[in-house]
Amino acid sequence: MACYGASMASREVAPTIEVRSPPGYDPSPIVETQAPTPVRGRRFGRFLVLGTLGSGGMGVVVEAHDEQLDRNVAIKLLHPLTARRHHARLLREAQALARLSHPNVVQVYDVGMVGEQTFIAMELVRGSTLAQWLRTPRDWRSVVALFLQAARGLAAAHDKDLVHRDFKPENCILGEDGRVRVVDFGLVREATGASQAESTVEVPADQTAHEPTDQTAHEPTDGAQVETSSSDKSGILKQRLTRAGVVLGTLAYMSLEQLQGKPADARTDQYSFCASLYEALFGVLPYDAHSAVALLTAMMSGRRKTPLESKVPRRLRRALERGLQLEPGARWPSMSALIVELEASTRRRRWWPAAALLGAGVALGGSLVQMGAEPDP
Image 1 (cartoon, rainbow, N blue to C red):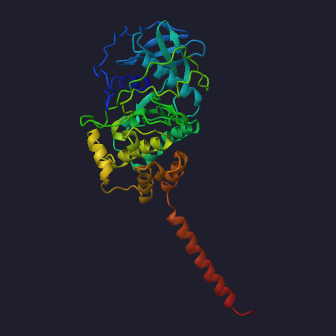
Image 2 (cartoon, rainbow, N blue to C red; image 1 turned 45 degrees about the vertical axis):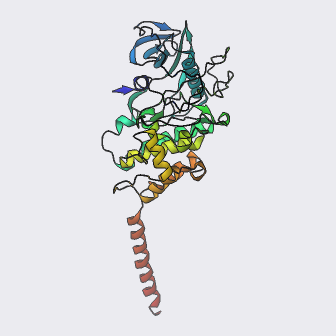
Image 3 (cartoon, rainbow, N blue to C red; image 1 turned 180 degrees about the vertical axis):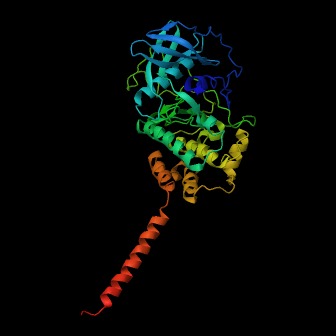
């Protein structure tokens, strides 16, 4: 049994893709002192810690009880001495989630600080990631049905001008209630604030396919207020929070514009979604992604992997191929448009009822002709 908090915490210790770093930049990692894991019975505001769900290099996720509303929640908690950039990222995630109220997006309840520790309280989802669920062979209809739920969550984010920028099966939780929720909005950014390129990219050859990058951030501006309202009073969603020379996202599902350090928008999420669904349906990624150089080379040369024979309808394949176009303008105009096409491509064709109706009509027509041919008495 897994839950959102545990799977999220295990991904907090990811390597960085450094690309064309600015002069004077020291790439050596910063060693940060970690605080002891919160113990059962400790309080964070109105939340009483029940136990640890998972931990990582930046913090810990605990299960806690909300004594005011009498429900259990997951609390994402940063170590007190973790770099301030990570606190800014957590604040960004909280504000993004506070804008969204959708069944396919994990819900945020509260955000604040206790002492020097920043925390975010959110919906506790027990279940597994889509990546874990896909380890067992599944029929294509079941796969598409669950991914459609995730697509609706992304579409809801896009409707609020939010871009996830790191969509992948590991960032989708299938709850015990059968509902998929998109999680881990730590890289989210306002689409309207993404007008400038993230970085100039010159990727190395040793980045592995499914390895998420660590998103190194600028220090947040002083005086940023922690809010859980839909307004971004601190402007944190508009901040780049990204040091020049760092690629955002997970390599296996990155679009060409992300690899090239260009601005990300809703079509970037669409590409990552289609790459994830492509892999889930066919067992291979669209492009060779064993390294960043291999991925970029495969994309630029147009060497997309052709899936083996499968029962996936051609219309569904074509829908994914359009979403995987390297030029963002050639993709679907929106996630909503892609959802409509995916739903249409998975509908069962009703051949037999139609054929039976046609046969009945022919028979009835013949009888009418025969009856009409008989002379009046």
